[in-house]
Image (cartoon, rainbow, N blue to C red; front, top):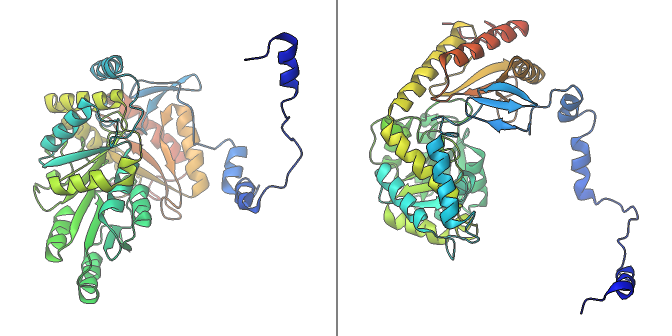
Length: 432
């Protein structure tokens, strides 16, 4: 029994105290101290008040948000369809919590499968014209888990150098050999495939590429990738994280954008962008998806998508199918902003989508421009090496179907003023 009164105090007094003596920090952590050395860039930008990361958002209504008590225009979100705060989406999430609770407390493999998980898998497979679908807890885990499951020892993965970090992670944990080809360079890819056919004719081959590249906003050369995959007996996987709900008829992704209905063996995606939620998916032929479902470690050993997240995606799918004008507006906005930036003399690389990078050049200037834009009331994302080439630091902007014309002009005006201040108009620019 629990001791009472004086006896209880005596018992507590006998509990060993934690030793507080200073101990030597293991050498493993030396890198952590060096990270904050005065000579390191993150230390410098923090001291200069330029540190842009992990900024807390106090309220987010889609195109507007509150940061540090100030309302700003959000031009750095992947909320492409503008559904993050849609009342219908929030209502669907609330209903799911009331019916199923807040989580699943287990993996899909065991106790974590709800009937709405099955509904969403079937719905996505139909939406994308495929036989089957498997859900994952995040988009990152999707690519990591799919690559680990389908590419093994003796196989070869051919990966675009600009692919997302989750694809890179998947190639690392896979036992397959990985060959990276220059961004969108299908001629080099053809040479690499030809060499592998001559040297390792029996190796399984997988070509993997982003459908829309998350930093540049460019679209992969999918017709050429399909042709190469067919010619060399390779499988083709497209990561449509930034393509589903963004490009293609009805928002059906990068292959649909080119009118391609076969030849892409697997398509992955995430719900954290157009679908205003969290989670990921992979679609393909039934036997392949069933194999992934039973062999992907990130699927089997991770808790499943919470019910509110699943319900959110289902609601967003409903709206996407019922309101195609959202996609039309999104593309109208994208063209308007690309042309506006170029007319101002700003370099937006070869953007083809609602992701529009604005090149700042030097790393320090990028952080200073980011700070000045935020002070003007515009939130964007500063992207610096190694995420982009040295000397090509940029402000990544992205747009929603719900941005108003007034908000778009406000963003352009702020970029013109600040771009002129830092001398990047017509210097790095590609004026039309």
